[in-house]
Image (cartoon, rainbow, N blue to C red; front, side, top):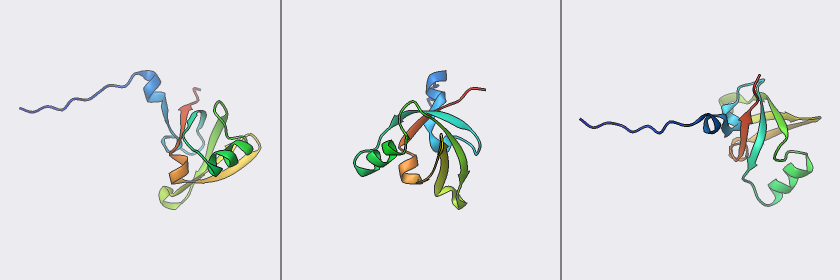
Length: 92
């Protein structure tokens, strides 16, 4: 009988995920931004950098984009860009 092998993730790996793993109203701390070029410069100039806390404010219809808040900045991101930003869920 063939079996499937499932790799169990430790707590640290479970906590790390993209913005789309967060639900509306949840917050997370940015751990990695895998973006280069003009997009990286724009995110940085808006204060979206590693170590900052973000909150998911809302998703668009069919989750094709996401509205996030970081400090006083509110920013809409396409799914293609948002999936390149890894976050660790805030506890409590």
